[in-house]
Image (cartoon, rainbow, N blue to C red; front, side, top):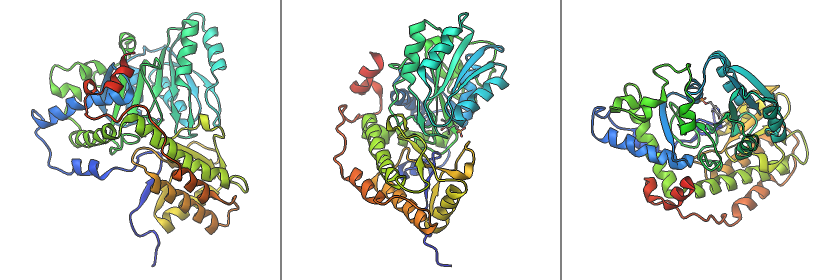
Length: 418
Ligand SMILES: *Cc1c(COP(=O)(O)O)cnc(C)c1O
């Protein structure tokens, strides 16, 4: 049967993201010697670059696992059974992290901000103030909640903790946002940060990262088991301890290529590109939502992530659109994960290896789908999107980073050590 979907498919979901050919080529090779040589050099070269992307001078442990593995690693390295954690829920993901904390024996206190707003800091502060005995050991926050596409003010949370002199650890999930939305671990006072490799870091799913500072390291309670212990992973006596066994060989080569790409572009430029690509989609959505059932889940641009956008379209319409774009055009959009009804929402992932023509294709394809499905929508979306692309690129202060080690990155280093 004739199909307009035949051709290169485009997976525009919020992770796994599009993998660059450079990453794929770096992985297309025989298994290396795991006992010495290139693999060891490549692995050790990744650590300073991961820290640069996280804007931290502290430690990073690498796990063979997905984002959920990093969640568990972060919790088990810092908590004791019975400790209280405060979950700032702004969508499905932080709730999931809290459920995991409950399973490992923590008492979970949740402030649920719903699915259309960020964490209100006054309410957060009031909860902290009520915790006079400092029972709350850790605050779990998601920088970008991928289910709602809301972006939380992580630095603001640190300011409220400090204002009250509350000693709780501030833990941030940057699985969706790292390498997309601006994030500064040390400057923002984050104690533990978790990330995965398959979103902004453009590498196939299977590796995740836990960044932690000395305060978090000192917090260690009775939850950690041998495999998850971040200490041997960050201070190994032998290479094998970095992963407690065989290294994720090919993922490491892939990640090396991905971090080289980020370094060549410069992290500030990567963030600025994400800003403009996201604004392209938002301009189209604002035109569409002027009439008919489509609406942006987060209306305030300042609170929207530039890695992912959640869009409402009415029950069953979003499912119909996703099915239509995938079957008729080769474009796969993200599901309405965690939403009620899930069939009424879709998400566009614009994280990592995404450029202007890709976003114009997403916008044009959604427009075609709205037409094909007879869904009423405001006019002028493509024109509005094109106007954003046609703008001069944003001026970014920091010059692109030339090499792949932080000591050779004056801009990044200054930022880290302020
Ligand atoms: C993707 C994602 C996760 C889960 O990561 P997995 O690799 O699927 O385990 C957790 N939190 C956020 C914010 C995410 O975007």
